[in-house]
Length: 303
Image 1 (tube, rainbow, N blue to C red):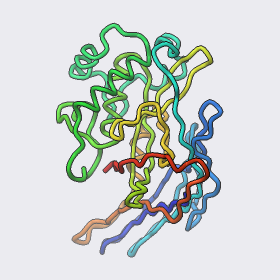
Image 2: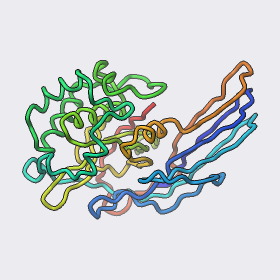
Image 3: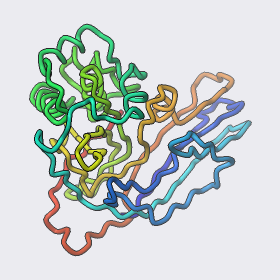
Image 4: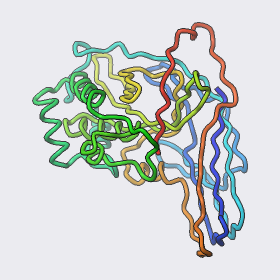
């Protein structure tokens, strides 16, 4: 695929004193030697002013002052995707005690909208998981419950995503909201889980929309795997070739917040406020040999 990512800041009649636009720099995604996403090229216009190292990923930053019109960032990405299925079950996946300490240190606590330490989350986790310690069975129980009990909203969800607790109470959530609920329940059960954000391509309608899903570590005798779980598309342990990952959660609340808030701005009010918009589109899409059987997926976009 060749993708185009566009971010637009419109002063909308105000005097923007200063602004900062920041976007994660996409990378290849390789899990257990399997190339799920191979970044083949990236071009940005205009060139970013600086690049910030966030530890696990880099952030491209554009900065400016005195904006009265529009500022547009356009990123063109060439990427090759491959379908991957993790052939795992309760017999091949080990208990949560076998999860490496790195994941336990980074992905078990409350994290912005992933609220873990709440009575409602704890009560549901006890109902679904009980004393189970096998990571596969814990993940499957949570996944099955979300698929069966959380509805996808009829219309767009403006603003920030609901928290895991709000999604649970509403029994409704879009892709990233359901994924955050999954993460909260898994973390409550002592199993690290985190979100990935990016886009998904609907080949039927030829549309690319924002998307969010779950990544988690499943320990096995051969070391373990970072697997993909997508509740809204009912894809359990499947990386779909129509996914594009822009951001992988580091476990840091500020990083996750920034993944949803790509702009910092100060302005002088003149009867209006600046407008910020962003979007995705596919410029070119081609399936390679052996890919004709890939199933179409449903576009589920975060707000």
